[in-house]
Amino acid sequence: MTTPVTGPAAIRSSTRPRSITVTMKELPDPAPGEVLVQTEYCGLCGSDLHIWNGDDGYGWVPCGTVLGHEIVGTVVLGDHTQNHPVGTRVVAIAQSGCGRCSACVAEYANGCAEKRTLGLSRDGGAARFVCIPASQLIAVPDAVPARTAVLTEPLSVAARAVAGRGRVTAADTVVVSGPGTIGILSALVCQYLGARVVLKGTATDVATRAGLASRLGLDLVDALPIGYKPTVWIEAAGASAALDDAVQELPVQGRLVVVALYGTPPVLAANDAVRKELDIVTSYSSHRPDYHLALDILQAHPGLGELLVEVVPLEDIALAFEKVGHGTAPKIAVAP
Ligand SMILES: [Zn+2]
Ligand SMILES: [Zn+2]
Image 1: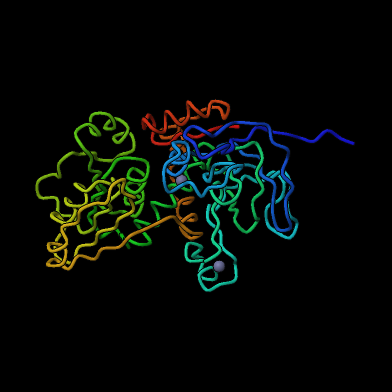
Image 2: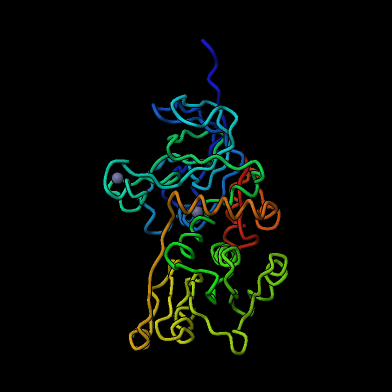
């Protein structure tokens, strides 16, 4: 009898606040069609923070679940029917569906009645090892280091909002409100597509994030430059005031893409929006084509991880969540 291989994993231990504990977990056994991945980095985001805080609306995440859906790692046990040999660096598509329904055939897992999300409804990657269906893995191009590749999932969310739902092209002039992770990444997607873009935040945002924005080649402002006429507005702030700004600043038939979630229900100046015939769309999560665009963008920015990602050892999960809560870096990732 051999001793089972174990590795640390961040597991929800109860629904009370601060009940995510790092414990040693036995190597999971891949089911047919799954691949065993050794995690290099796993990013933490807002949904993880809600679980950490024990917030309402996340009580359904089962105790015992390993956290984490922003995964980059290396295949350590492959599935020979698929294209991911041992040693391949991969990222995981966070959401998956049944694979058979019309939503799944259209690669829109969010529309599947059996949708599952890594780190929420099945074990995620804030652990040394994670089993992931091979169909959910995408190989990382050699030019993209792991610390940059860990941005693939949040960048795919931005890619969906900007390119997919927002249909932004080089002909557009864009405002992105909210210089948090998704806001910054959305502005980078606009930049990649050749659109003109400014990132709009509060005066405090400008004071704390201006240096970072300029290193990324982005303009971060607290008021739109005189004469700046957006055709598209990406709302990533999650604040009523930003939504109101968008409605006032957009022209007739302008496009408003809401990618934020709101802590308190926002107020929308609906009559103004109606009179302008604004094209209002929402954007949530992301799907395979968005991940491919994200990886294309990361190939153009291989050093992005150095600028945006702060790495914390998995053992220090409490410190990691403190940093997520304070927004010390645009992205906090744990390293198991
Ligand atoms: Zn995320
Ligand atoms: Zn389905």
